[in-house]
Image 1 (cartoon, rainbow, N blue to C red):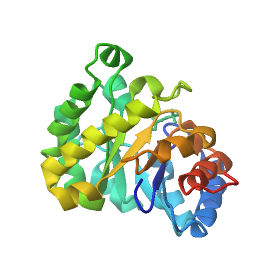
Image 2 (cartoon, helix red, strand yellow; image 1 turned 45 degrees about the horizontal axis):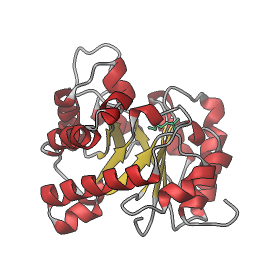
Image 3 (cartoon, rainbow, N blue to C red; image 1 turned 90 degrees about the vertical axis):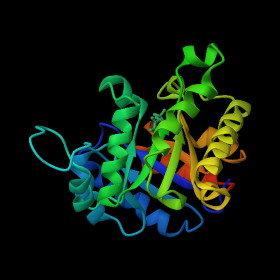
Image 4 (spheres, helix red, strand yellow; image 1 turned 90 degrees about the horizontal axis):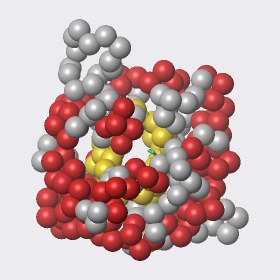
Length: 253
Ligand code: 13P
């Protein structure tokens, strides 16, 4: 695990203004948890409000459009996200790849847009159960990443990779520790090949998929697991902070 684990909440399509006290509670606790880096990606509608509400935690977006501006009804550009107070953007999430048919070329175009807007990137990858059962998980994930990494301007701490097996998202199933460790090791090797030993080692690799306070400690103790990208369990301060505590091995997690 990294010296300072990175715990990121992805609120997905959840969160009204009534959730702002939850963000504030997470922020207040994070101010006392300096050994953990905590961040939240609320829906677009709450980015500015969460940004104003918090002092310590990072705020990001869950997606951006690949274009700079123009006639794209309903879309939001990377520059708009940055203007609202976001510091990073999640790209290539499997839910967007599936529901919005985002392919690797589209993810690459969005990476370029995020680069231009100065946003840090959390780049998601992950295989379906079918691909895993066929024994092709590693090839598939590394293929997704190779395509995307060629477009990344700044690696090091500006880039984070999130490995989220599609079948583990929102299902209550987590990948076996051995499989997580093997995939993260393969991703680390690719990062070092792509960016060199020093910068490649700085890129954080998060695990995502049904991470909860109860399983976080075992997952986060694995080599090359530098944090977690958390969906459902990030919607309450109590469970999200339970994961943050587990990341540093707190007994009361
Ligand atoms: P869950 O934690 O709800 O499984 O979601 C994981 C995820 O997709 C985070 O991006």
